[in-house]
Amino acid sequence: MAGSQDSPAISTRIKLNASYWRHGYGVPFSEDVVPSSLFLKHRHYLVLDIETQRLVQEVGGWDHVDKLGISVACAYDSKTDQYLSFLEQDLPKLIELCEERLVVGYNIRGFDLPVMVPYGLNLKRVDAFDIMYDLEALTRQRFLKLEHVARGTLGTGKSADGLMAVEWWKTGQIQKIIDYCMQDVKVTRDVFQYGRQNGFVKLQRSEENITSVPVQWN
Image (cartoon, rainbow, N blue to C red; front, side, top):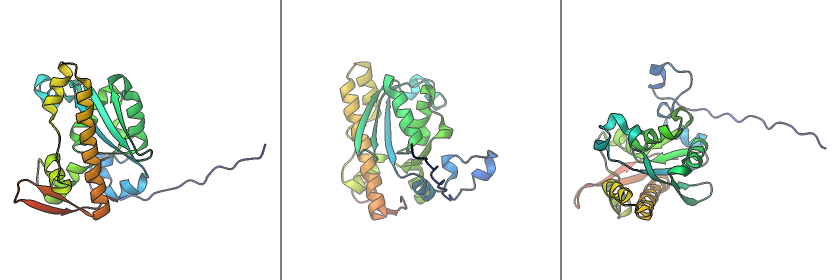
């Protein structure tokens, strides 16, 4: 048998935000890393969206998102160019993908990823790029909805809202949840791709109010 040689290690230089120097841990979290460094580190990305079994007010508020429960999760994997759906029992497969890819989504740092923690997701092992957080930092505006970004950038919006998804869960209409969640993933993926290819996205809060926002998502 011919001998084998170990492949040389590949190192990636990353830029860190000031937050890294404040928390005192030796390893930077994804929010400590400048976004362009995340894109250099990861060749492939996973666009993620989840739907929950319960509403926030049913579990005692935003401090208890770990009690929301996941009904359906959907994702787009850039490595395979496939759209995927996961039921609650399938979440270990999704968590494995999250640890292997750059996870991209809209408000995933504030919602989707924390909701996944009770299922075994270790946030310290996940690199995440949150489109909403980036746009809020760039525009200095809060509470930017995916609907506004999608309508301005793509000319289309979401098909429903999370309230309906919870009602569908309670009435056992799982396929409707999958369809809705998958549409959110497709919209988020298309917004992300548009920004990568064109260097900007657009926000549309009304018919007359359309704003272009330069982005660096490569």
